[in-house]
Length: 115
Image: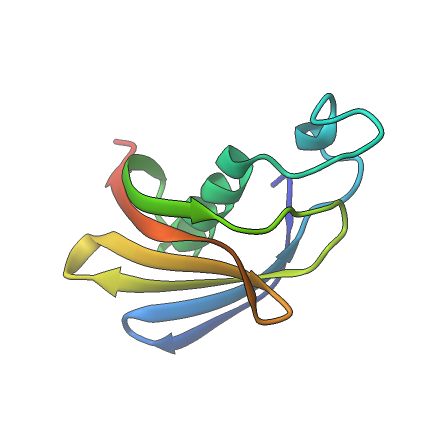
């Protein structure tokens, strides 16, 4: 895993919260941007999918995205919280990534099995 999953808590059968961080030597920071590293949005989305896959013990990929908003830059080593809840069926999720109770990223995500 290219990020550190510090904690995973199942709030109920439909919601989880994870604490994560990304080390400054992560390949995502290489070239994005030299001297001013930030975590790309696609990396943030992959973390959300990875946390859901880990919690469900399944191999999943992002099938579709809706209403995704990026609101705050993420620097190396900064702790984040990923909040995920099912949205209607087993494959749709609403999510929020936060830092110190400020939204970093939010939206809807559909996941599919890699089989």
